[in-house]
Length: 132
Image (cartoon, rainbow, N blue to C red):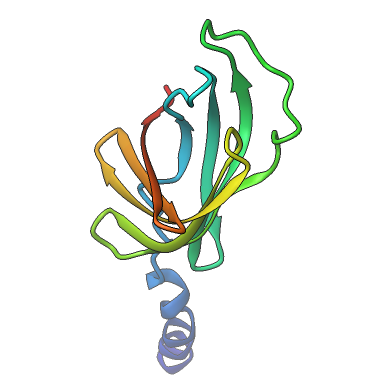
């Protein structure tokens, strides 16, 4: 009887002791900085296998009124590799106002996410704020 109990415990212990995977600290909804036209958006950052990606979930004009946009639902951040220290590298970011894809990196600082990207020597940087 004791032997069977020990065997059952041995077989189930790994299931009990296995920790749940922690959510990446960058996951969530972020409000972008206004673009050159004064428009901004909301982006949902989420895991994509072992990387981070983001989808545009809303677009707004400078007064906060919703804007129709063909980019809503589009992946605008992808292939970001977490470094474990709040920074991400080797990813891509699409800028809807420029219609360009940039080689990008991100840096998390509390409730702010620095997003920087470059293409052909032209670089842009924005600070996104965690939506409440």
